[in-house]
Length: 176
Image (cartoon, rainbow, N blue to C red):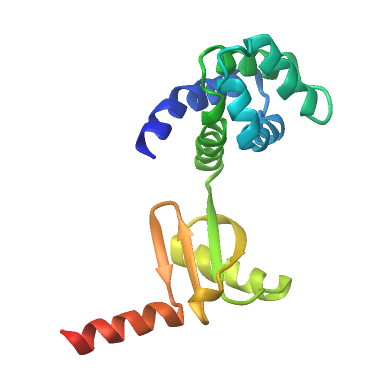
């Protein structure tokens, strides 16, 4: 993972600085390219020595919905020419983190054993924003293994109030 982050960092920072200088946001097209680049058969095609950079570029840009701006096409060409198509999802993650840091936001993933409705998520969001001292972009992922409660991940911080975590703590205390 660290290697992927190391490879992605210069691309994300350059894209972010370019966007700030020109007053543009690459998020819409970058997220779309990252989703496309997560396709395993596409990555296998891109890694094929018989596939040219132009063929890979045409394939990826052909899948994109809408028209890519010139800056996006140039960025995609650079990523493909440098053999970094598989790094695009991590570039998008780091770009999002840079954008969020400037705006004072952070991405938060709420893992829950059960679905959370809109009103409960809004209340939870308010509580978590106070706990983590920043605005949060919440996403919910179901994880039935938690049994009950939630686990919240914000960057490298974790708040685990799940039943599973409590049972693990009890087991550790009883066996100590």
